[in-house]
Image (cartoon, rainbow, N blue to C red):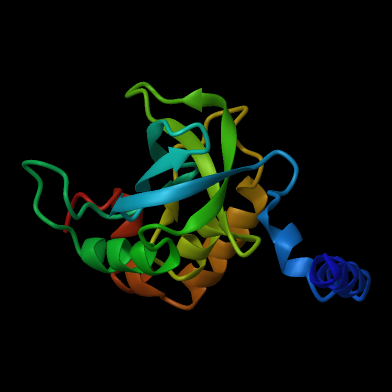
Length: 176
């Protein structure tokens, strides 16, 4: 009994000193929910498990990456690289935060969302690194449009990845 009491006092003291703050990190930011990555399908699509155990195919909002796995479509330049980079950002089994769009479904019944890793917007990181372009902009799902457009301009100016091939991203990746 004395050992338990000492342990409780120790935990109380550590909490007061902020040494157990990592335990609080399991709470998602407001408007977001925790999900677990099952797998990355390609650069802009991921399969997740929600907290209630349901499985969802998620289409990342406001971005488009070159195709790497679309049936009857050749792998497009930077398609595999975009997919690999997305896998690095969202490894299988990783718990991440998901912010649903509104509406939260597209015409293919995929959930529309932003994904956050370590409080960074994955959709934006893909654009910043030149693996995605801003696309499929439909109101009211434009919450982070300004940030994504700024990231795109910088990636374009630096000729990052998809922007290194003149006209490629503007062609929706179809002419290459």
